[in-house]
Length: 196
Image 1 (cartoon, rainbow, N blue to C red):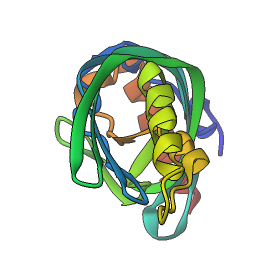
Image 2: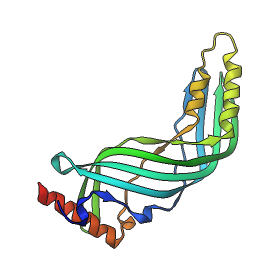
Image 3: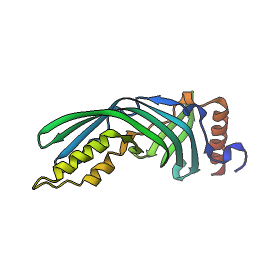
Image 4: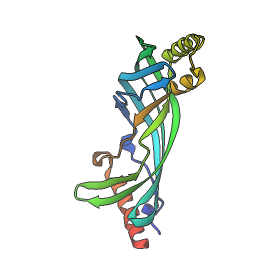
């Protein structure tokens, strides 16, 4: 393969921006008699940079390696249930600067008005490292519960679960591709098709 479109290394500069309301509901955390339901009614995530490497695969599909550098902040609400008793904790949450790497397989083809991206194999969710005072308070609560007789609670496992938020993945939209990036992607898809 030759030409600018053959490298398979793509960047879409319009994706480097601030996203609001990324994860409104976060999967519940359960550990023994403790259940924590987390939500983030307001939040923002700043994507600083990203890169996507596509490699040709079987049946006109592409394996992709996505790397994203990001940070953010928001408001975290934790509804906690322990043995029939419930309480609500709230606090600001920080998403420290971190780099996420994700792998998968997609089909990409040019259609009228843009590109059709069909996911074939992508993670259902991604885990993002978070920091919040709620985590420390819940671990202290867990340690109190674990001292009770006939309880089996793994507080370190609860702490680990509370430092990772699970958020849905998202796909590239047509409006996020500049004319120069379209030319690069077109060239790459054309070269791959010609190389088969």
